[in-house]
Image (cartoon, rainbow, N blue to C red; front, side):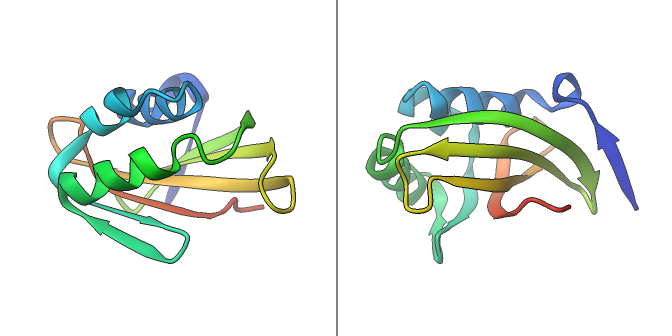
Length: 118
């Protein structure tokens, strides 16, 4: 069952990831992940902080984007935050859901990206 959330209801790590990524703050973004976290992005899986940090360092400034919050939800133990991204990436506009699974301390243990649900 899904529960709707407002932007203000998002956990600190979810808000911090989005804010840090938009601000190009690799240190802030990396600090939000648990040691054994997994991040899935563009067909690649990054396991553990070292791989995740390499991914962040490589991709955080790859494109310039602006985000518009669309909706958020909690489903099956994950938090999904949907945004419209507009920028200088191929296609220029996409609605994307950032999916976070957090540990008991509020750190990101899993991150995935998917098309935003309608």
